[in-house]
Length: 213
Image (cartoon, rainbow, N blue to C red; front, side, top):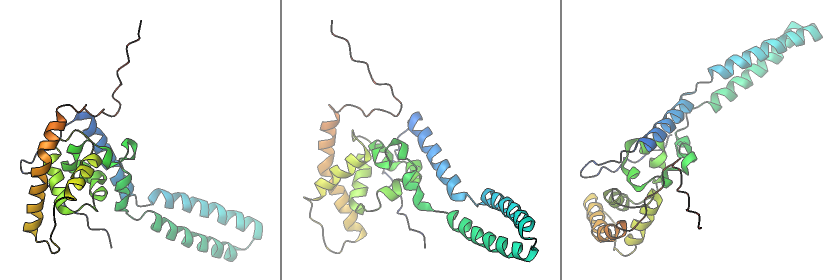
């Protein structure tokens, strides 16, 4: 059975980041992941069939025995078919590696915690173990948090340590706890954002230091 992925947390204002560079990276990553998952093994089977035919002709020429050639090639063809079917089976967990080129989903700017395409590119798997109240709180802070997704999750996690949690939580309890985490974290993030440097973008040229005379 496939893994059930949690739904993306939706912000109250439905905000999401909009950056041309990251949009291109995310769209390519999702497209590549979907291509890999949709691979049906047709090309591999065609190549395998050609090899089997060549092998059959070689055995026929050497052993002069069509029955032996058919048996050997039949066994190899069956084994090859089973291998191809197994290796080309759709694998949703590959999405965790879709953004490997930029360090993974956790290295994206915090705002991409609430971005649908990022969620398809492995974010859902990346935050699978985060408590719901913390994930909801992080989604409400992500638009102003001056760091990465992993930085934001860590920040909210540290706040959550000091906020009591009941043993049996109802959906209302989860929402209440998330709002409390936001209430505590928002002033800290707002103050920190005033002086925090912006995150560099992928491929963005660094500024050259001025030479001292």
